[in-house]
Image 1 (cartoon, rainbow, N blue to C red):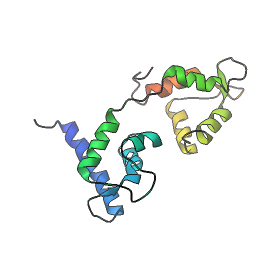
Image 2 (cartoon, helix red, strand yellow):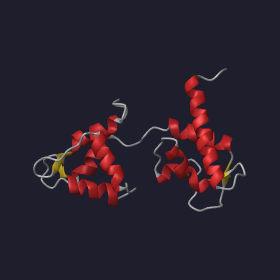
Image 3 (tube, one colour):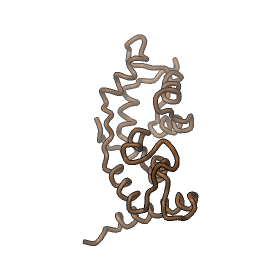
Amino acid sequence: MSMSREEREELEDVREVFDLFDFWDGRDGLIDAIKVGDLLRCMGLNPTLAQSEKLGGTKATGQKQYAFEEVLSIFKQAKNEKEKGTYRAYVEAFKSFDREGQGYISLAEMNNMLTAMGERLPDESVSEILKLTDTREDIEGNLKYEEFIKKVMKGPDGKEDVI
């Protein structure tokens, strides 16, 4: 069975990223498992730390190494894994910061929540998310979090996969 052009390009992309990581690791045809999450992020995925570990990543250097074929398998698994967050769960998380129960959260509080809690996002990532979702605060410095969640969950392609 022959590969489609898209599959060939994806394979080439994975090989290119693997080779770059291998170069940094000494060109022995293996990459350290601690770099699984970083490698997947370089390939356009966004695994959490827990997902990286579930896929074979480690917390310490030198525990495990992967050859290209193994990394390719990990990439395919990660690519096919669906996000487990639900619209309802995200709304509930934001509600805990909605003091008046009106469906709004201050932009400053949201920034703090995304950059200082759980798996922290860098300030630049939060700014990029706000820009890509065309999210702006109102005159009082608040944003309607249900609309924000819907926009984020649609993703850059505009498809509602998760809701």
